[in-house]
Image (spheres, rainbow, N blue to C red):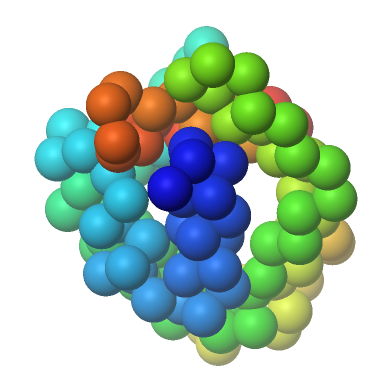
Length: 116
């Protein structure tokens, strides 16, 4: 399975809010972070629990891949993200675009960085 196919499978799991499948594509010490910035979710378990919390707040959350490219160990997606109404009374989040950079080490994703 190519890295591009793995990243696409991660997005499919994300959209199904299947955190276990999503993190199954990650290394144990993988993280999600802002581009060249702060780590948002650390490690496979931190990613699992962080996404589970986010999905509980935004049960309609989805990411649509608008453009995609694989370059060596990197997969780049331009994603269109919609949150939908929150369950905790948080103010609405307008849909937004983000560039997501998936970095692979071997057959697993080691880091996802978001440029927004």
